[in-house]
Image (tube, one colour):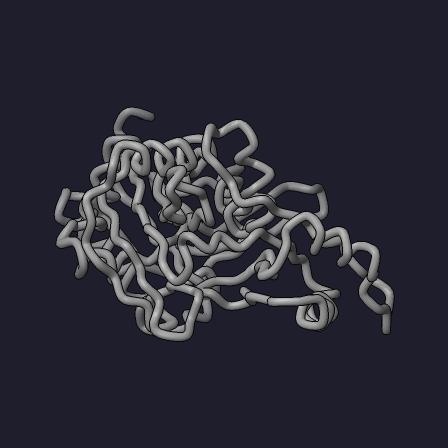
Length: 295
């Protein structure tokens, strides 16, 4: 068996490279030949006859640690099994699309309003729409760009002037508005799910003065034992989105978990250090079993 781990051509830090290498090492320990490449070394080509072509040959599977939906779809059409699938990655890359896809997952979601897209130069955000957002969600509320990682593009606003400014700044980018869950202010639970099963979790607590709990923004991880309710919520979300591997972010409330986000390429380095769980090994084992059953 031979696999390829694909990372982005322009990794933003060593952790991107380390994640790929960790998975490759775990696969090799199971007797699988594994290469790590950047997606700039491979191509997705459509020829004059509409045929899709790629130079990825001789691999039984690809661990797709990127968000390039075009290459992902081309690889799948060439018959290569992707972990995660191109469609699952595409859905998770767009946070609003994730919410729409989780309609029947049996998981509580945050009340969310998608912003209308704008293509007109020098436009001013629609005041009637903002009044609707404020009346539905109340203040404070969260303004979130549909694309982004590590807490980037997420803003907490406390009144109409802030909302108006935030919406104007996001006018030409896909974005949405969410109810602020005060019960989980500055903290959440990150659950790693592999093959539909939650294997590890940590509570993330934001640094003082920050409402986002991302480790990259100074949040601190704490090892926890998942309750059945939170485990079920994470597994339902991952299964509904047909993800082989993901990080599910849950907010804590007195009424139980509320889903915040699902990350198809969630980093596991910090969680491994916090929990002691070898996430790379669990993912590699899932991959080998899945490919073996497919043959």
